[in-house]
Image (cartoon, rainbow, N blue to C red; front, side):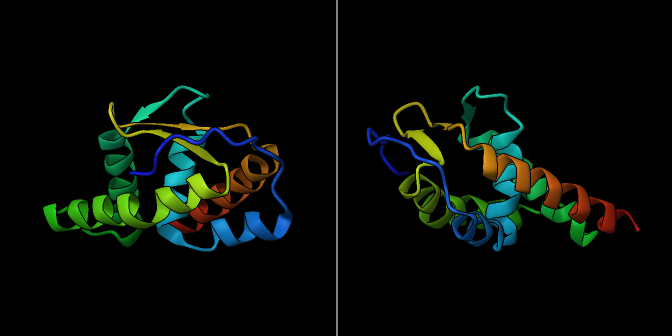
Length: 122
């Protein structure tokens, strides 16, 4: 997992927000992270949230393989990307992730989440 960031966190551009939301798995991770009310969440909780949402959207069972794929993808790809752009602060020692305040991202993620989950229910 990426090391905690000490750099100053600035506002994201709209282009960056859309790039971050373009990937489904990263979007699902953001739904979980942004819903944590600024409290850090455990990496295992994030994996469970993302894997459960993916299985529900696909209307497939939650399998060990999906869980492991989500864990690897988050750890190796999505969390480092989110850390690099100043969205998350990761504590690898305690396996905790905290979402940093990014109002524009939170606004668009909430809008996309609502639309995405509404479509999945139809």
